[in-house]
Image 1: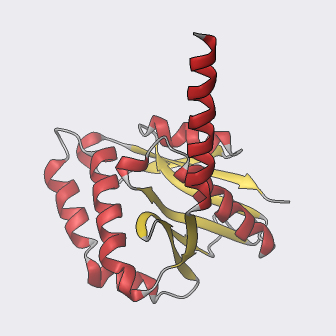
Image 2: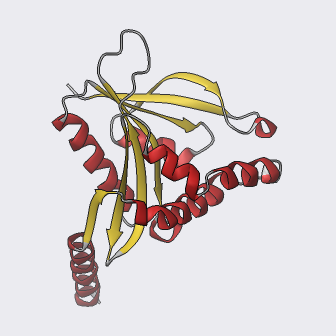
Length: 189
């Protein structure tokens, strides 16, 4: 009995190590836009859909069409990253050089970080976040910050594990839900 568990554990560990080796993160290209849109749409819809916000959520997601994503890619100080596994985009992030206040210094904001819903809980988000943190440190930013819906408990816990702490709030996107955005930040120095 013990031997089987040991074998199973060893295979799981080997599988995880193999999976990590075939993932890559790179700057997004225009040809990635349809896949970025797909990951963003499915992840956002699954995470934030409620009975009350269906219409406004669908309208918001429809506004994030391929042309809108291309326009965001052209914005100054904005970058899109994609995570690929075996040639398929399984995650995306939009990062922006933007401060959160007058005295916040040099900052990088995580505007979006979405992982394919089929990849949740498999380490993809962790890999993407570690990449972003290292990128922000390499570029000598003082802070990394983001907004996350307070009701997105999984997201809030995820960011807290990396050292993000809430420092402010604002109204969320979907007024029907009376939602609150948490402003979270972590120091990089």
